[in-house]
Length: 66
Image (tube, rainbow, N blue to C red; front, side):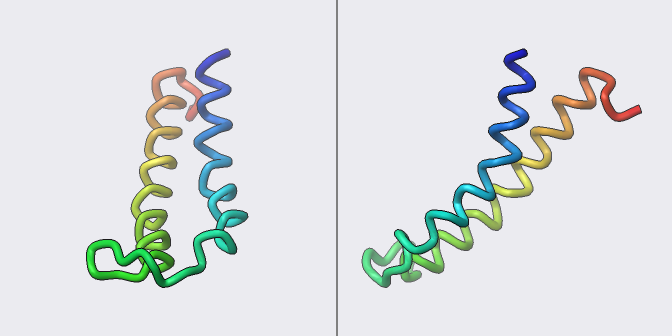
């Protein structure tokens, strides 16, 4: 049951960040030389495939991909 809840969280996480876009649409602070908004988008470009990979690995262990 915990795995299913974690899978649901990993599925919804990238979509929730879309709702947060109006809150992060700002130039300051500068992070790694990027305006915060660009840093936020770059961060989620990296995090979203990691979420997908985590879901894949959990389903693979349970035999849910057959």
